[in-house]
Image (cartoon, rainbow, N blue to C red; front, side, top):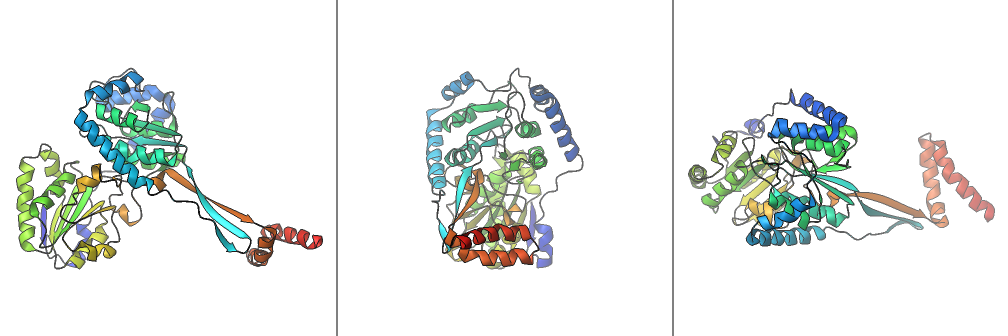
Length: 430
């Protein structure tokens, strides 16, 4: 870990840099995968499963029997936990449904906006070192609430050719039955292009490694939308003198264990808390099952001592973290100053893990500084918004002259005429 005490502002741009991914060869690799999937369909996916994941399977599609059997392979305790998380996530995302509101902008001119679900969406669920069944909840629930007609789920099989039963159980609980055994960039290519088994979709969601992220970006060349250009996970913790070092360390490591390319940032205004958190992080790291991954992530991470909370928030807004934790008691005073963050956790007991699993907010969030211009996934991510307007004869009379003047000023006389012919007809009737 890199320790910095009271760095000058001119040093901040260097401190907010993320670990650089090697992108030189990545684009060609992704392009080749897309070409292979486009040419050979399901067979390409079977071949790439063997090449990248070391697994041979006969069928890409998960059978109904496999889905049914999954329920018996997980504990009742886990089922209850998944159900509670599902209830909370559903409650929070249901609150995002907004009623249609019609607005009369000018007398006789009524405008409004309505949501329409994106008909076909694809969900990518990582299934390697951490099978993220929680992400099934985060993506399938708002997709169902939005009314998406077709929801396709892709996730990589294990070495035995099976999908983690918790992923299958959660998918079934959320009403998803179109599940396919393929991961990485090839899964994204399949959902983009379509194969004999996997239908093409209009928008792709879900986290993943650098290959998945690059593939999602590449998919946009085929008029497929993506949720966001999200990369490795990250957290920034701001701690004052009331913070609890044990809690801060636990939150930092909860993100560091995602992978060696993750990054965590710890900011504090209290030197005692600062030093104790560093000690606690090293202590907890030793007993962490995924400590090798976390240790590598910590090598690219920063522990920074600053003068004031205001200064820490200024640094945080520049960094734009995926997760921001305010480990302090008077956090209410600082909420208005937060400009750039994916999701915010307030107070010593609001651990980031709550948002990852069961508080109700979505854990699919912008990383790598994209919190400056992207939101996390929500119900809105699964809908398009279509505007409507209705002009009565009186409405066109009230607004027509304005339109004619503006159209003529732009030299668009056909635009002007579309109004003029209507006003002329109405005047002739009179």
